[in-house]
Image (cartoon, rainbow, N blue to C red; front, side, top):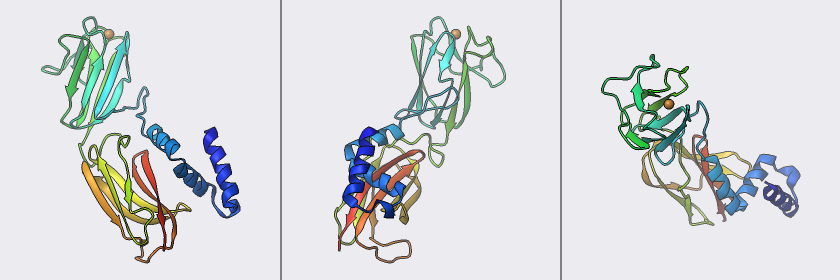
Length: 252
Ligand SMILES: [Cu+2]
């Protein structure tokens, strides 16, 4: 953080026009200039959130740990096709699938851990699945939890852009630029071009983007079809709370 503020000050002095630029535009410029730090920040932005009620998924998998007598986190949200891994002393705290109302019952034919200290299950069907420790599940529900499975596409789980890179070429450009990126899984995302002041120049993609390689061309024009001027632009890929940004310089 100290580094970023220092860099903003340096930029302000160098640019000599701080009063003419919004603070947010400056912050964006400073962030992108410090590429290494920028990348680090992006990692932080896409870090899965953990909490008592907030689910999380890591690279398509959610991990739940338990110690006597609670699960951490007790509830997770994933996308269909993801796997959940439970870690714990299963020999002494048997894990069983439960229905939503009971605290001591189990679902006939439901999933359960048979042996070992790690149990993994892949969830392919959207819905909410409950589980409990059959030893402690009756203690106020303290060893109960749930898995919420969203649709595999359209309503994806938490975005994961950690291993995604935005490749913009040519850069600098005189007219248009090609933007390429590869997604590890399908996700709702937007690909936008912003100007230096944070104004939206053109929305290139929006909606559910398939897994795999994407290549999109920015024609160098704004949303009205008019050619943009020379200057600094930002290409931003955003999905949920995660975002990636790359600076593009346009000359003419
Ligand atoms: Cu238990």
